[in-house]
Length: 158
Image (cartoon, rainbow, N blue to C red; front, side, top):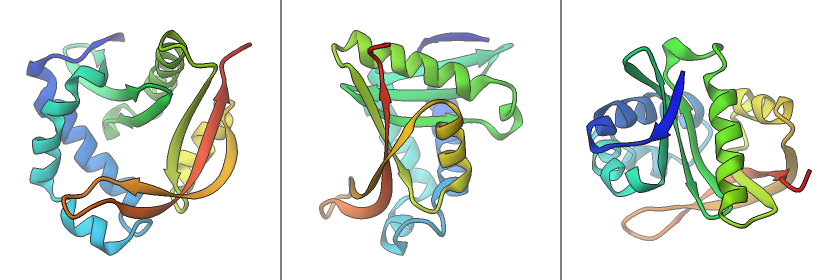
């Protein structure tokens, strides 16, 4: 597995992984209003603007997963279904922590939809602490949509 900054040629793979993974973790766990606007096409539209913040994990010759890091927030962590359970997510999360620290922060954070038990278990096993419930303002054209989430925190000073 190789971790590297995303390139324009990765956009289709990133959008595909993001779309299917978002559905797995969010449908049934976020407001229907958000599900309605997170169409398949919306992921392909959003990816190009986020490539600068994206790191991909490449296994063989295919993108197996990605992270998006902005400042102290790990905005996205996704792994293609066929690569789950193979250590890709763990490697990406360690890289996200490294990037947040390199951005000058002593603590990283990320938001997890309250009902996404699989992701919450993963972060807890990875040493992240549940900092409590809050409403994450999911971007939408008509203004942010509040999503019930938990803020997970990782101290990076150790």
